[in-house]
Length: 191
Image 1 (cartoon, rainbow, N blue to C red):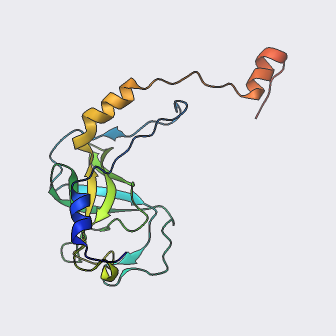
Image 2: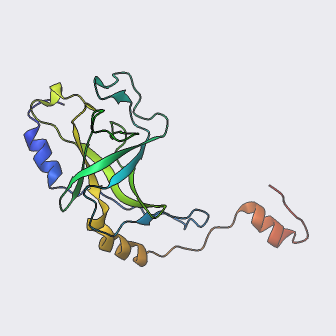
C-alpha cells in the first residue's frame, strides 16, 4: 500500500468490521464461547489468540514471518474504548504484562477474550492497526503501537437477533447411518 494513512484510518474508524456466517447445519458437539455483554472493558486485561506473523517490539514484525503460522496467545490491557472499538497499546518492558502481545498481520478476525470468573468471554475481534504518515513506511508491531479490536458489546443485540432467527434444516444422514438403519438394521457399522 502507498499514500497517506489518514483517509484509510478515518474510513476504518467509522466502519463495522464484523460478520456472522450461517452454517448449513447446527454444530452440536462444541460449546460456543459466551459473548461479553458488559460495557466496562477499559483497563481490563484481555487475551489475544491468533496465528498471524511474529516479531518483537524493538524491530517489529519479522519480514519473513508467515501470516498463517502457529496458533499463539498473549495478553494486553485495553487502553481505550469508543462506540465501535477496543484499543490496545503494545507496551514495552516497564509497563508490559507478563505475556504482552499485540495482534499482527494475519490475525484479523481472531478472538479477543476477557476472563470473567474463570470463564472466557468474547469481548473483541482483531481488526486493524493505527497508522499515520505514509503507508509504505508503516512497520507493524513496534512498542507503543495501537491496534483496534471490534467491540463486541456494541453488537450483542444484533448478534442475538440474527442467531435467534436462524433455523437449521434436519441433519443429512450419513450413508453409513442410512445403510445400518434402513438397508440392514441388524448390521452394526463401527467407524
